[in-house]
Length: 114
Length: 116
Image 1: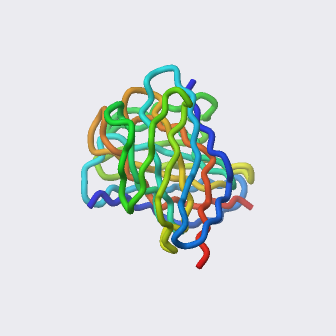
Image 2 (image 1 turned 90 degrees about the vertical axis):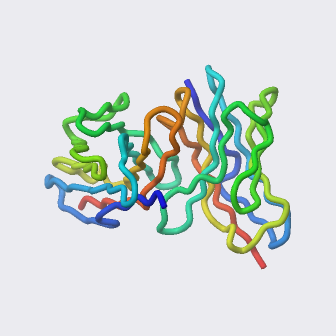
């Protein structure tokens, strides 16, 4: 069965610092992997997705993630945090070959201090 | 583009009553809609998948007689929580996709249900 584990329910960084949000996955099939961001009172917004093409995936707002099969990881990074990046981030894996039926991690709240 | 709305955003109901939550795709036709449930500090759990004009497909462990899903049009799906109990209190989120297969899901902002 597919699953994802997000390490750290909260991550705090200073503005301008590197952002690293960790996600490890378990999948019995080649995975489709996703990162979503949720701002307060808004729906989840897709940041980026991995669909078996390039292992380094670039997304919106300067975020990127690297698929590492040997480590079963799909960590999200951003070189320099902005105050506006403060939000909840969810890693997800598709239960099947597509965007259908997503299995989400428990989420990581990113806190950015001035 | 690709906006999904939910109504209401917040609802309180008494135990034993039913409550309906609407999910609308505002600027696209949604062939498939999904309903998720999120408990505090936990991940979103898929409850069911609904295709327009068809019966919803429920995930294992989800009571289909308790969580009634209707997808009567390409822009509207409803989730009715019947005979609600306090343990049904949760955050319910819908998503919609304009096509089958590898189409991106667009998420609504969620509905917080509190059963007293």
